[in-house]
Image (tube, rainbow over all chains, first blue to last red; front, side, top):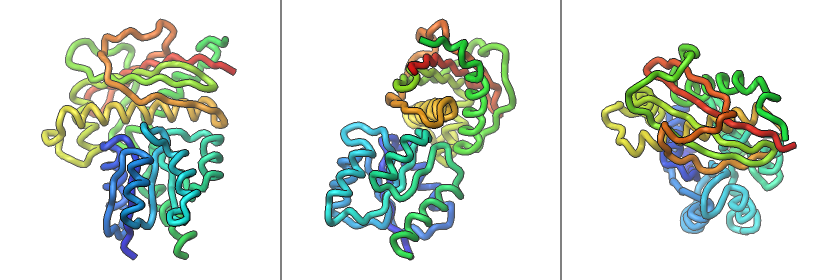
Length: 128
Length: 152
């Protein structure tokens, strides 16, 4: 299956790194859409479907927590799996994000194989 | 309020977070600690603050050769193709990741809010109480200063 991926991060450098890492991991990527915050991600998701979203937490305009809440309350988007990619690897933050509906949690820094594993796990729950 | 002297492991956590971040995300090796920050040359410096179970400020400074090489590796491009602004963005992102790693190691079940990293001057004032570490890298050096004050 060719994946349509969305990467949400306020750092263009990090978006570029994550996109390149996914491609190098061997996953079949059909398209990769970038958004710089949660609101931009929501606007894009309402126009075009993706198979999975990778989102940072700390972002201006709309952060990752608010994005998860918005997705959970949107009947059309609530099933889109989200994997959080964040520098915050505290247990409390991870539990909070998973409770809000995140399907996976990857801490920065991460190894490429970790990112691929979490993506496959999250996609497996949806498509498996 | 506890003093940073109460957390002597901060130096160790800074070294571990720096090595982990540079090696995992930038494919860049840390050769070892240096006694002092090398004098001269241009340095690219980023700063961020954090609040929560500990409050404080984090500075990271990379000399130009290190910043160029690390940015190139992070972005997957040749060093000469990386613009100044993109190099600076990578330096900021690096500060974010190292600081986040240290805080997570400091208190695994803690709560922290990090500000967005901003470029600053290498000469910018740093708290006297900051723990400082300097490391020699494959190419160039990185200097770190962190003032961490537990609140709980």
